[in-house]
Image 1: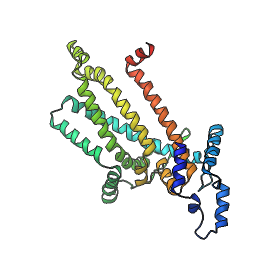
Image 2: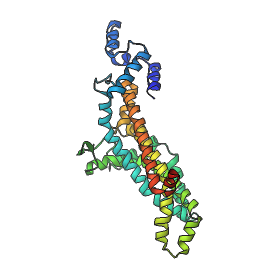
Image 3: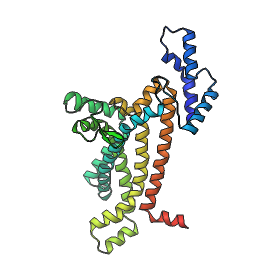
Image 4: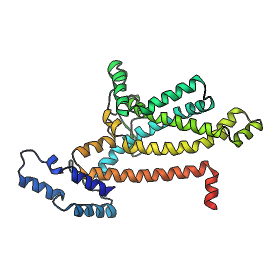
Length: 307
């Protein structure tokens, strides 16, 4: 990933043209190149970066601000984590009950309405949904702010805005924008899993034993449909964390996605590379967590591992 980014940004343009003033002489531009190490061949720059990152976890300093690139990203990470966590939690809390209902009553008017809505939510682009929400709730009705992040409070080392009403007011619209698509996906996955599990023998056996419908659905059905939901939920959570760029840009949310866009525009190579390295590590850890949850939900995974 780091090699691809180095090569891609090298092909796109010269960072010095973004950093130097239009009146700068060629000698001044050369001094900037030397100070940033951009006068070296690309392969040399890359191996210098690789050595510092591997030995000291030093991803370099931002060309624009001179601050350590990883520090800039870690300062923005709590905002992105907050947005992604709230959005995916809302998607699961709404999508699972609706998907189960649609799976249990596939021919009802309510189920058809839910599935039609899910198609719309899944198909509409995020930036359009975000702009429409701003137009309705911020411009026409004036109920919610159009962008930015509310006041934050410390939760250990992390700064969060969910502890105040002003923070929630600024969080609602970007969360709704992301949740519209993610909730639609959870609905469809849950409905499909419910329809697949209902005819199976263990559901029939549980009903034949005289168990209440609540226990059949809440224990036997729910535990089994959680496996595909955990898979999709984990992948989508990682996708929101890594690529909530459009939503953060539309709502001026000060997260990592907005920092990434600003860094790509200014060709701030250390920040872009550090962002992608952090994202790769996060996605790898997230997949590990999903695998661990599998072993807790499905005993067959543990038995296969022992065999």
